[in-house]
Amino acid sequence: MPARPSKGRRPAQPVSLLPSSPNAPKRPLRPLAFLLGLSGVSGALASEPGSPALPPSATVVVTASLAPGSLALSNREILILDAETIQRMPVNTLGEILALAATVDLQSRVPGGLFGDLRMRGTHYAGVLVCIDGVRWNDPQTGHFNLEIPIPMEMVDRIEVLTGSQCAFFGSEAVGGVINVITRRPARRTEARAEAGSYGQASAAGLVEVSEGPWHGRTFAGHARSDGFTANRGFGMTQAVAEAGRDLAQGYVRALYTFLDSRFGASGFYGNYPSTEATTGHGLLLSAVLDQGAFAGHATRLDATWRRHDDNFVLYKDRPDLYQNLHTNDTTQFKVVSVLGKIGGATLTGAVEASRDTLASARLGNRRADRLAGTLEAQGELAPGLTLQTSLRSDHYSTWGNVLTPGAGLTWFLSPRLKLRAAWGRAFRAPSFTELYYTSPAQIGNAALQPERADSVEGGADWYGAGGTVLSLTAFHRRDRDQIDWIRRLPVEPWTAANIGSVNVDGLSVSAAVQLLPSLRGTAGWTFTQQDIPPADYTSRYAPDGVRHQVSLSADADLGGGTRLATTFQYKQRTLEGPDPALLSFRLGRTHGAWEVYLQGNNLLDRRYEEIIGVPMPGRTFSLGLRWNPRKI
Image (cartoon, rainbow, N blue to C red; front, side, top):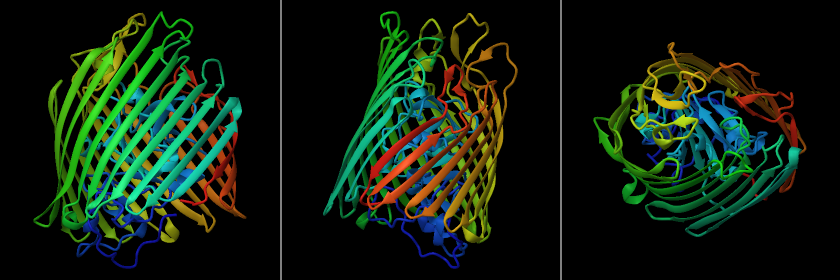
């Protein structure tokens, strides 16, 4: 439930590069807080002289800019999904969680959102950036793999859906928005769950966390499978995580290893073929958050990460010799972010990044792309209640050159309950290895592709009402230039990657979070998107495939006696022909001590629909589960 507005000014909080620093003060997270904005001001500025009294829910620290800070002083649209809310909803994967957001168009290829495409504000499927604790996790081969997030729900502290162009902070692909999965710090905790349901679906997982003195660690293992709701649509997924961390006098360091193996029937995925696909991912994240002692006034975060992704695609599952794709890509990244100090009353933060992507593929060849980037951000009050944030990022790519992405945003509290905000920024997306180099009878890449570029602007208002009500409104416009798509002029021709020119996107999003009764809370979101695609003498494969209207509703009720009921409804009006998804789901759980038994139903209206043309999704399904959690989140 969103909290009531504060009656007085909150005490000053130190600047901190959360979430990994355990010594920094932790703010309470509010479930499904449809509060809007990109974090434009650090936490220290939330209580500068002359600042308005802010709702306590708005003091949640978000990590959407270089110096994470108060959500109340953000200047773009944000949706926060916290761990408690995630556990209560009728979902089993992070993909299903993201589908609850009216700002996210999840186009699933595998039930449960295990594999599919992410779109936001009418972008290409590669125009959304996925991060883990602020570290980019997109696949350099193709955006089709960006949803393979190796973090289990048991380890999630919150998910930040950062809507709008975020390239000034995150770089390439953050055109329509960013999905930032924030992990929580290990504690003394053990959890296990098992579930079984329709179409031979079954899953089991276990988590063990330890905390002894300055040392913290955890291990996780899980497996899920399904026979499939139709021929050649079954799947199997195995996941494992190991983590170790240690408190320091200056902050916290950790090492996190992730493993994700997915195998699924890919019938219809890339054409009318009985295909199969298997992917395996390994990840290693090393990070240090230094925000105590000598670093108290210059909080610094260092990240070194490695990610490997293997893909094995077979066109005819019984004849792998006819056509098979084998790809392996590696990404190595280094990133340093530091609060540099204050100049003229503004907080100055800087970041430096370096990365290398490599690909070994019989179909695309052996490829390499290097990137070096630097960012500066300034944040400060222009007048009481009026805050300005500006940023400038420079990226250099070894494959095509340089790009500058500036950004700026304003927040203005007209009163303690009403905030206005506006933001402008430039964005870009570098072409993937597949778009550059892929060759097959059906698709041909284009090594001469230039990066997509975009300019975006948005404005909005947030109102904090009595009883914890939060209402938000955002209008946005984006002009895409040199958009990358696959095109062809005749049906018999192969699809060819090309820069197709300018596309204008306009839209409006509205959201509300309301405590209807002491035991009942509800949320609602609606997003309208209009794409203006100029006429052309060719057919575009992905640009016309969008969502015009998207609605998301949820309710969570405490029925007493340890029983809870959560329901969700999602509706999309797609721009292409075909049945529009209208999905009603529920989760009914009863807790007794450390045990919870729950019944879950999805697609209760038994709608037959396709998120991606030619890839049908299952109808009505049910599952029964058991969870053991002696220490609740």
